[in-house]
Amino acid sequence: DAGVTQSPTHLIKTRGQQVTLRCSPKSGHDTVSWYQQALGQGPQFIFQYYEEEERQRGNFPDRFSGHQFPNYSSELNVNALLLGDSALYLCASSFRDRITDTQYFGPGTRLTVL
Amino acid sequence: GIQVEQSPPDLILQEGANSTLRCNFSDSVNNLQWFHQNPWGQLINLFYIPSGTKQNGRLSATTVATERYSLLYISSSQTTDSGVYFCAAPKTGANSKLTFGKGITLSVRP
Image (cartoon, chains in turn brown, green):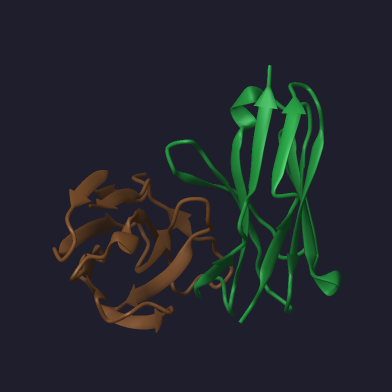
């Protein structure tokens, strides 16, 4: 049973560039959520995708956008990168109809913006 | 929104000691999760515990929903228990966004 996978593991970009991060959910899961974790902080919710639509959104600017594909995998795109976007980006998956289920996290993508 | 506070922020233990980590939350929740984040950043599920007590080996957790707190107990700590422990609660159902505390950094020394 494959868990949540994310790619790439590490990424270095410069200010102003754009980045795309990818996530494949745990087998059987249909909902993907993205979180940003700055150094020394807890993860902060970015948004959640279900049925290929954004369902919930946290307090992040429009530079952060996403997509979910028919196979439930997801991408997180960040435009016009700022130094403050440097963080660990975590993807979590769950099954929508199991309201008492837990969310499972991937290993994360560590983004450094120079 | 929900506020989640964890204490203490840092904890240093000698191997073999026991510890209690606390999580307070501001509103009634119907779910609470405990995670352990390893040095590589992976968040590992420890407990899904909306109420009551659960045990898994040397770890156990208790949530008292009516008093809005949860406790994580670590017994006979090992160096591999080191890392950051987070509790998190969803806004509504289990699939909604999780609000995390700031974490408790645990260091277990040999």
